[in-house]
Amino acid sequence: MKNDVSLKKDGVSTFPLFTQPVHLLLIFIYISPHRGVCCWRPTLMASGSGRGEGVGEHRPNPIVRVVGVNGPLFVCEDSSVLSKFPQMYKKDYSGPHLGVEELEYLSEFVSIEFITAEDRQYWASLRMRHEFSCRVYRHLTDKMGLFLRHGSQFGAAFIGYRDLKDHGNCLVYFGPLSQLSATAAARVAASVGKEAWVVEEFPIKATGCLSVSKIESYWGPSGQGGNSVCGDKGGKCVKKRRLSYTPIVQL
Image (cartoon, rainbow, N blue to C red; front, side, top):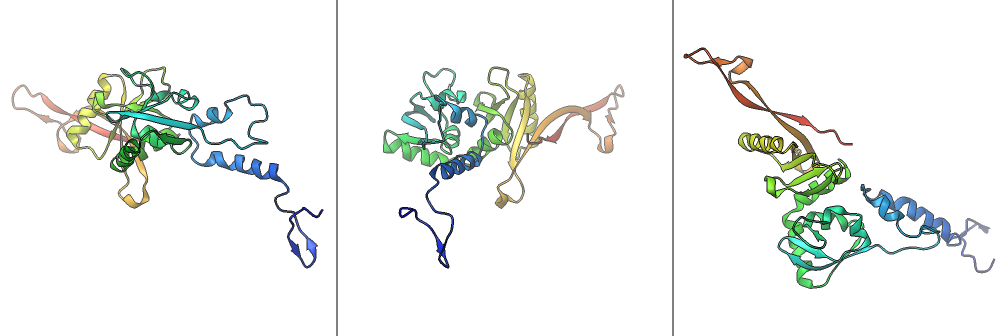
């Protein structure tokens, strides 16, 4: 056909270009979900009428609109995207509020719009200041399958949930922690029925890899080599609180 755009080599037409738009669109849809799959994104992609969606038309990214700030939190308009991201609902706040880590995480999959330039600059500043926290948030969400809320009330960075309807599973702290801080973290987590996790970078910082460990405390002998030290009076053996670090395997 005259209107076909073809490649010719030695007078022989090869596969015509741009004559298979449906195939090209299918390839795009098949590849795009692999760009950082997260636990809630399949639900987001499947929302809507479902009748022929994603086959014959290209839908723009969903939009999250930031309408103001409330301290370190960004106030957003409620939308279909945020309804599938239940972490946005903060206790004692009305309407959807997102922390810098949550907004940074969503920005990978949706378009973020700001009403004012000041709010956009504020977000950019917080992203740079809390770069490690944003990376940890993404790692624990995508790699470990956790839902995260901020854990400042426990002195932790985050509270990790397997199911937001249930009790939180762990308190997440940023390492490395001193012996005293690790002991306090384990005690606080145990007092509220949670595990204490510590996240830190591998020694080779350039790799950008993170290690996640569970802190456990136990009472053990204070002497070296496993031998308890007994006092002069009463012959009582002295024990001290010990810590162990167990690596958390990614899901």
